[in-house]
Image (tube, rainbow, N blue to C red; front, top):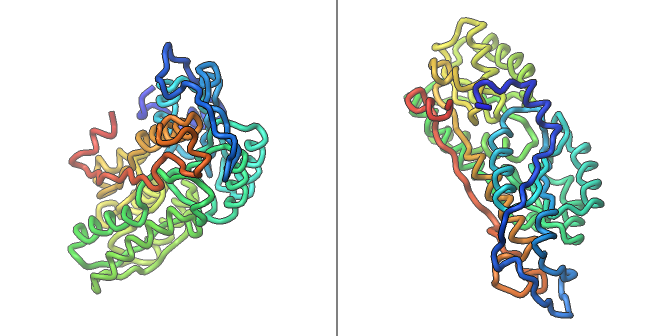
Length: 349
């Protein structure tokens, strides 16, 4: 099914399903069991998996919010990686942003002992201790897209440098504004990914005294709330030059508000991500630019990193758990691409 004819209702139905893994016909030598040293200095030594073990392994993506279509590309990457590796994959999380609900799900997952967990944390701090419990239970954990405050609670991070993404957006905004104008920012306060993106914009705007940030508002990553707050921004600031969105739902919400208030084409928009309902607004010029994350690659890589850790695939040690030397990158920046009317067709296919 193409992205263009995949409805929000279809997505919500899909969110409840588990993506099945497909067993491969062969395996690499990295799956051959190896003898582990008797003395484990930092964690219990877990034998390297046999082929039959691998095909039954379940890798889970625990998301902060499942009811936004942004995750479709990431799920495509995770599912494809699962098929290539011959393992099962599963997508879970609360329907709305809810750190407490996400924590409860994580606690339940640990008791089920999946082969590995990637997590988009709803909160930077409240999950740290439970994530460490997962590591102690020999369940590898990797953060994707957004990170936690305690880096020892996960083995690696895969996603964009979010402050860098904001700086990229800020430079594009300066270009569109010709270095001057009144700007409003729609974001989700308290969520690391959005705080970092917002700060990236502010880093750039600080270099341009003729650009003034007149208001920063919370859109709660909710399309209905986004429409309401974007409309309020337009009404409160008749001299507004640009609205910036740091989350996946903001772009289309801003575009609808501008069309409904008759200000489309008068107020510039720089958005985030490339949801299907947003792209037509880029194509018609209502949204001047959006920053597209490389989401398929992000979850593809994260799934592979978890697999390497679980199966000791990188032969640096007989078992990396003994020296406590996790074999995956600590930080992996997948970057963003600036999408405009000139190249948007490549994201609409």
